[in-house]
Amino acid sequence: MSGAVQEEQIMDAFFGAPGPDLDIVAKARALQPLIREFAQQGEDDRRVAEEVITAMKEAGLLHISVPRRWSGFGANFRTFIDTVAEVARADGATGWVSALLNSSTWFVALFSDQAQEDVFGANPRACVSAVLSPGGPFVQASSTKKVERVDGGIRVTGQWGYSSGSLHADWAIVPVRTGEDEHGLPVNSLVLIPSSDLTIQDTWHVAGMRATGSNTVVAEDVFIPDHRIELIGDLAAEKYGREWAEEDNYHASFVPVAEIILSSAQIGMARAALDLTRGFGAEKPVTYTVFKHAKESTVHQIELAKAQSEVDQAHLLAARSCAAIDRAARDRRTMTIEERARTRMDNGQAARLCRRAINRCLSINGAFSFALVNPLQQIWRNSETASRHALVFPEMGAEVYGKVLFGIEDPVQPF
Image 1 (tube, one colour):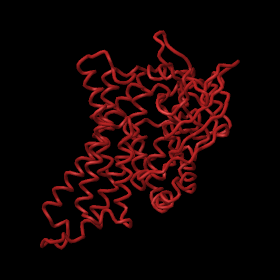
Image 2 (cartoon, one colour):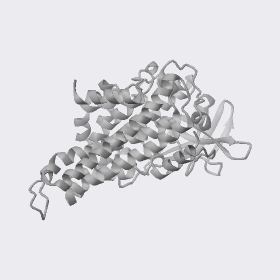
Image 3 (cartoon, rainbow, N blue to C red):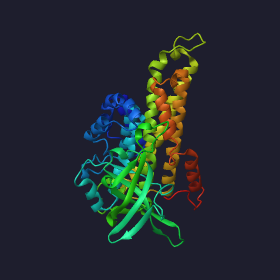
Image 4 (cartoon, rainbow, N blue to C red):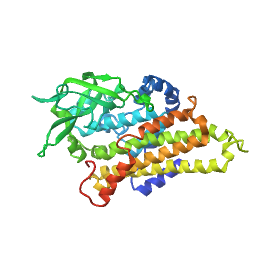
């Protein structure tokens, strides 16, 4: 029995939930040489190379948790994060796109059966991008952006930024304001729009995660039928539009999934930084010391051990959250408030630990870490950018979790 398999079995027993499907994880590992080959092209073109997207589609790696009913793997979310981590180990931006396209495409399984048929019926390999936040430069009732109720649905004009993977998506999920509650506060919904009804504005000019192509999608007076509209509040409360729900992933919790999948690319990038540090970084001399090789320095040994431990801790936190999600889905129950809040906390902590580990690796490797020919600088830029995602912010996760632990009935986010 290999050490990796034995470790997974121990973790499975500890968490009390099924571990990853190692065959699916192996598919991602097999694509790492191709992903690395096109990583710089993706950075230069500000989009993942089509050769890589095609290979991942053919391997089923953009439909990891999509139900088997629609020709996906139907894999649990532990498999999801471990598979995406292997993609990100080869290239962080490709891993991020993989995470976002996989999760957004899974979101469709929570929409009505007719919406699922619209997306997957004609194209079982359809991919979906998503923007979830109803704030910022999104659809508002104004002279240039509007939502109009018409027979059988709504007509929408608007724009939505940070749509990762939109350059490779067949559909988009975006938030729109569809009404007001009894207090006059906005009621927001997520809607499904075919990419053929959208245009993309090239707005993604950034220092890190350049290849994610997280551009702005634009709708001009687009009709959206009612069966492709889901209230965000209902999704957060696990009141899903789907009727057929014979597979576990039809019961997974929307908000915790949207959160924890963001850790997967961070874990992969941190492992890549460790790989480089244990490789060429181990042999470099330590300038102004007697050490001809960094691996001989006690200081460098200790820092590497700390970095490895931090990445291991990040993986354990993410795996624990996935175990909670997968157990609840298997048992057909709603996750508790505390489980949901802890997932938000775990996600932020995992990102913080990975970022810290990557920075340790930079210090071990010295100033050469920032040379453009060194992959470490790209890992660093990608991690520093991705770890600032709003759902990753560690301090906010701590506030969410702390309020719940104290029993305060004024949550920071909807559950």
